[in-house]
Length: 181
Image 1 (cartoon, helix red, strand yellow):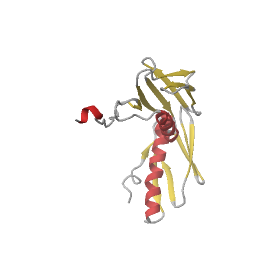
Image 2: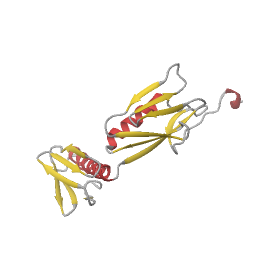
Image 3: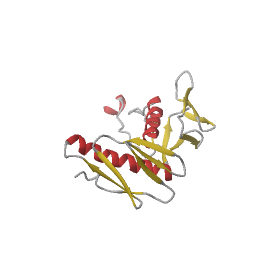
Image 4: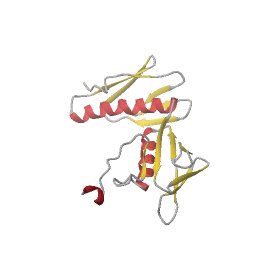
C-alpha cells in the first residue's frame, strides 16, 4: 500500500469535494479546481474525508495512487488557504515592479527591461524597494511553473550570488581566480 495514497484527505469547512465520473471537483471560498482521475484509481468522499483506492499492485498504479492523493490535498489547500512563495532579487540595479498585480517588469542587467504577464489565479506583490516578490496562487502546479519562469530570467550565479532565488535558498558559492591562490 502506498504510504501517501493510503492517508485520507480531511475536508475543511467551506470546501466541497464532488466526484462525477472520471473527474474530481473541489470548490472553496477562493475558487473551483478540477482534476481528471487516472484509470484504476478510486476516489470516495465520506463524512468530510476523501479516501483513495487502487485496482491492483502494479508499479504504475502505486505511483498514481500517491500522486492522486497529493493532487487532491493540494487542491483542497489551494481553494481554502492558497499558496504563497517569496523570491528575492540580488544584484546591483536588479529590481522588479508590478502593474496591478498581473504584470511584472524586471530590470536584471540586460539591455532591456523584461516583462512577464502572470496567468489567471496568480498574483504578485513587490516589496522592499523591488528586491522581494511575494507570489500567491490557488493552483500549486501553476504557481510552481510561474516561479520557475521568473527564476529562469536570471538564475543565481555562483561567484557573486547575483540573480533571482527563493527566500532562504542557499547558493553554493565558488572562489574566484584571486581567491584560489
